[in-house]
Structures are given as structure tokens and as C-alpha cells.
Image (cartoon, rainbow, N blue to C red; front, top):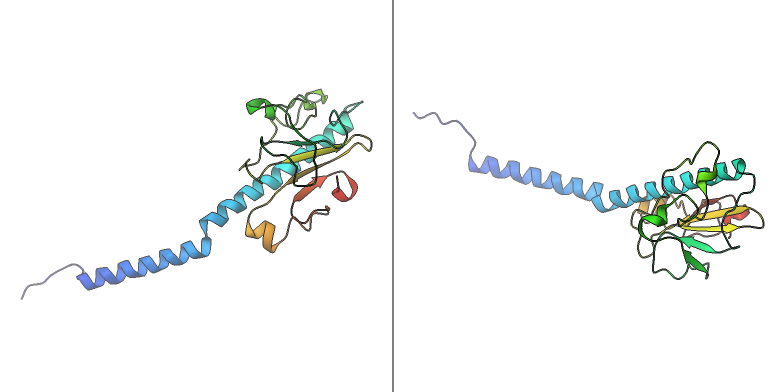
Length: 187
């Protein structure tokens, strides 16, 4: 009698089939595209909160703060867009390439963060993770009231859909994530 050690072909096929089913279930449950969209949305919300804090520090520290050269002009971090979120018709792209990230009032947020007495709280202005199409950051100052609003479009089902961060942020738009100091965030 011959004593064979190892697996039969049937046993190997069953194990491979079970692994394939488990892999398919994990891919369906985790949905890598949505996980990437959630990561980009988390980055967007973090960037906007950082900008809001930085501008707030600038407003409290600088004696004569300037939030931008014109009232209710919209500043964006991407080229080729003619309206900020469809709400502002005057759009200005400050800087190009690496200068759009400058913190000395020549970047896409025209605030001179270098004039803060303790130094700039950020080393460069953030850009949207996608930074194309409908995914970009926009900044609108109200020079009369010394307030501002920063907006971004969210893309994941988790933040733009189920939890509705765009509609529950206290702003006037239900399709944009809005932060800032403007009452009602309606600039």
C-alpha cells in the first residue's frame, strides 16, 4: 500500500474557490474607490479647518488685516473655472503653479500670513486633493465686515451623502462644504 501525502486536486479547487469568494466579499464591502473618496474628503475638511484657523489667527494678530484686494471676489486654487461653486461670477486665480500656494498674499488665498508676529502657522496654502473639474477650494472675503468663507465640494457617499456634511455645516449651500467667519456662510 502506497501512502501519499498532500492535497487532492478537488481539495485545492475548493480552497481556491473559498478564497475567491472571500476576496470578492471584501472588495464589495470595503469599496476601494469610496475609501479613496473618503480620504480625499477628510483631507478637504482638514485643509479648510486649517485655513480657517490660520486666517483667524491672522485677523487677531495683525493690526490692519487685509483679506483680499476687492470685496466679494472669489479666489480659487485651480485654473479654468469661471464661477466659484456657481455662486460667484467674479473669479480670480492668484498665482500659477507653485506660486498659487504662496503664503505672502500672492497665493490663491490673498492673505499675508508672513505678517503674523509668531510666523505663519502654515508653510504653504493647501490645494484640493483632486484640484480639477468641480473639485477645488474657493475663498471669498467680505472686506467691509472683515469676514470670509472657504468652500469645497465633497465627493464620497459617507460625507456628501449619508452624513450630509455639506448640508449640515451651517452654510447657505447644501452642495458645498463651507467654513468661515461670515454669519450664515452666505458669501
